[in-house]
Image (cartoon, rainbow, N blue to C red; front, side, top):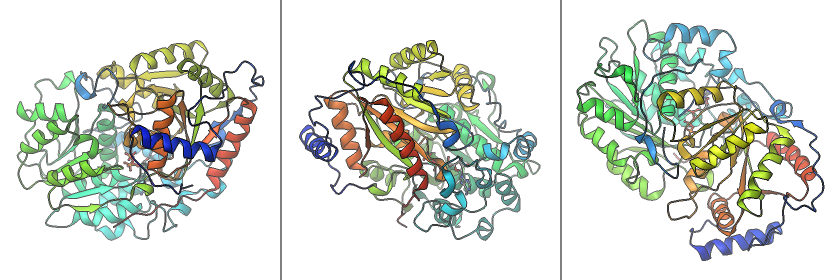
Length: 547
Ligand SMILES: Nc1ncnc2c1ncn2[C@@H]1O[C@H](COP(=O)(O)OP(=O)(O)OP(=O)(O)O)[C@@H](O)[C@H]1O
């Protein structure tokens, strides 16, 4: 539901007005004197579990290295290891097994195919095919992949993945990407709408398979996301393997020390990719496509912008530059235009950015410690298929992991404190379903595509460095659920004036009105959650896109 007021800045005064206007509408004190679920006088909590997992959405896939723990940013601490998630194909020599996987053992659901949808109890009105028939939906498509003159082997790959029709971003971006002579593209589309397939198909269409010299490079902010993209390219190109297709990861990996990086498609993090080119382990002379996924994050000069610029400077001048993200804040968009000059652009208005299938809620707590109690109550209330808890700091992640494990929950925690092999292992534990709850920092806020995720929790509201609201991170975090037309829920915890103001500023920015869950009455919370999920499943998402 869109609010009528226009988004404003994160300045304290603007925020407190916002908070007040929300408070008026939601009967909630703007100064957050706060009511609460930790109140000893609150009605006794009786956990009559309902099974969220049964009721909500679907299957599994893959993952992401980056951004922001509080203590450490980014890719810096990413040593080695190339362990692949059990279900993910081994880039470079993947295809036989990936195809087998695609054809048996429920792999089609893992491959996200539209026919692989395992419809939840309330999901009667939300069928992927229906969503792709709605012109207002970002998944809408009237055209077919066949019309794009793709290599026949790619059509076979798409069919195996159960990609029957292109989504709106694919339908619009692909003709622009595939045009000859190649043109640069800046593409924006909501989270979970299929941007990966768009840029992967472009690369797979352009590479010359008679040589294994690198010809296309994708840069992603995290180890996990690079691996995920490599997995998609390998699967989509499975039928080209015989013709010589090789997809190679450029993430920290001791096994590659001194080795040559071969393969037409290289998917890596910017630091490793740059190092490999500089050390001449990666011959970039023939590279004709450079793609940046999560491009606004990648071009952020406080983050990886410098590394990306340096990689680009090492490539041939006429390289096709392709930038994709769900978010392009205006200042980054200007920078993106310098990085990808004269690019065709597909962008969205800010009010179109949220995925309507994601129900947004918040819980009000008295103190930081009260948030933990509320978290535990919340998890006691229902069984959630898979969920991600986003926190600001590594030590918070470790503490929640310790306490939830002690309470018998199957949790995993992945922060920048972990390195290569350990990261892969923890993430695989979550992706495979062995751990139902992933506790993480912003390191995994972007790009991860694990379809069983039905709930995202903002234990800490995402903040910028100066403690203002971080709009983009919020959007990417909640976008870990509600993938490709599925429904999901996002629950944000507020506990003081700043967290409250930041959340309200974020909601106003994206013109959404979050539902307040009243922690004074957990039975009521349970009823509301049931109702919310039921309604969100019956709602048909409506989002437009500018051409
Ligand atoms: N045409 C299609 N038909 C069916 N499923 C698709 C299609 N295109 C993409 N998907 C599936 O949709 C899911 C989301 O796709 P993807 O990860 O590319 O989203 P995204 O737009 O890159 O999201 P984010 O902004 O979060 O990175 C994936 O599981 C993918 O396999």
